[in-house]
Image (cartoon, rainbow, N blue to C red):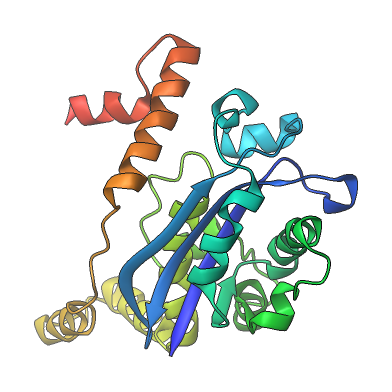
Length: 241
């Protein structure tokens, strides 16, 4: 079973106002395991970026000026997702933007929902945790998932984080965290409990960024540093270590 965990960043919130996609990030799951295969592209939207969106992702028009337009990455993206299942947090938002981009290329093309089945992890989270906050950050806190690198939103990083959240949401593993937390409170967590937990998580695949993804990230950080005339917070923290 192949699934693609997907996230996008955009120039604004309203596709009806002609806002566009500026970044796509995808990670591949096969039989509920990360394979290490990713898809990541920055995209030139050929339009202005709303100030509110810029505050969320930090991606500027200047940074995107030499990046490909959506049409130039469409064939590679289409090949990567195929007709497999997509996992998206707040799926209607991302699919609406993807459909808009596809329609601009060729109105006869299938929409995302016509070519792929789509799982909305936000819907799953709301069913499991009604009345609670179910943003990606809130779910990371709830499930003790490390999202400390998420200073700004980024499509590939968010897709990687969402893959962890989704596997917990759908794997019947939320009880593991609840019981472990209760055990820590009353002191009943045993060495056998810790060993069982370690065995459960020990065979997960560690996914590392590709050289292309690292280069794209470094270009973005260098651009921010140039604009601010000071080292990025990431480098400051690394030097402190």
